[in-house]
Length: 308
Image (cartoon, rainbow, N blue to C red; front, side, top):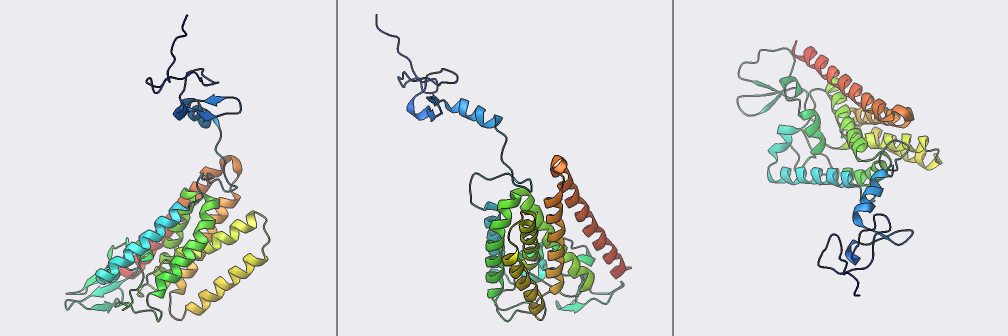
């Protein structure tokens, strides 16, 4: 008597005599997955993966199956896209740069804001004028080669090149340890922290650049290596160079933005690194929310002082 023909449960037109060692359904070569004994079907493999606890780093970040630092590449892409936009329309810098308070005159020129209110014919611009988005958008802009009304760097296009090179080097390492979500939160909070310190200390200066966020990544790199118990000699040399550069660049860049990003990044990463394991995610998220609230409160108080 001839044996009954068996076909793949996912591809009925494919004749096969191999079955899944787990569910015993017949499977074709396209549906076979190597197992310790025999083969498993794709559905059993998916079910098994769901039951396996995902590996996480010391900081709670999910260990990515791919080594590609996706968030870092996206951030670099956003900065480059913004820069290309500036080359096409340089006015983007004046419109979206970090500026605490300024005046736009009826002649289209920019003027220094002297506090208080009542400027007939003039419009108050900047964070004090309700343009809170500048606290974040300025961190994705860089001065174009020709500069802007906020001034120009002596290095022109090297401004964005240096920042993106630093982001590529630091971002890959920090993203791998923190995971994508925590890393993105760290970057954005560091950028915001840099802008807030600029607003508190130098509200009439216009600034652009990802440096604040990058200094936050530098602080995170330091904390991560200490938490992992690595040899700190090379890390200490790196951090010393980072701080020396902050001092040197104060002559032509915003040291307030650098310092604000550095402090914010350090605080965020300490919360990530030393949160208790059992309530790690909750504590880390709460720390980020509290820090964000403090930064917002500082902006509100400064705005009140400038406009009151």
